[in-house]
Length: 179
Image (cartoon, rainbow, N blue to C red):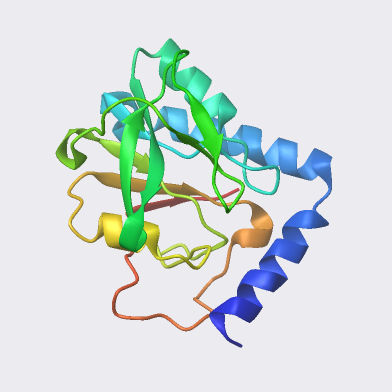
């Protein structure tokens, strides 16, 4: 199957996932993340503002704030580029054509200042292969990123091996947390 076909299948599985199972899996994944050394040592966390389909990132953002970490969120730029901007209570947001809330105020944070990025996606393997949403924004951003990357994979997003075609430009994620 093509990447597009796999994306459609996983999106369908996420839409039909029992909300109680999703919520329970999310809680377990948050606990795992917060116990890791890379979470505890990080000062600046890159993370998206999730849509209803995705693992809810609000609790991660709340914990980062409680832990006195800086939260930065991505903004898509021309030519499939991306930058991260500080996310505070004064950050102004606007929806993109993808339906994702992005910052419209503030100045970008240097990539080297981001310790940990919680990477979104649709499919993940234990050894770090990731099927993203198809824009290539994260693969381009992560190509020269030297910090730590992690994904939190719900059960319907976890595959033993990549079932989708893997390309040379696909970036492998450092840590894949599963339940």
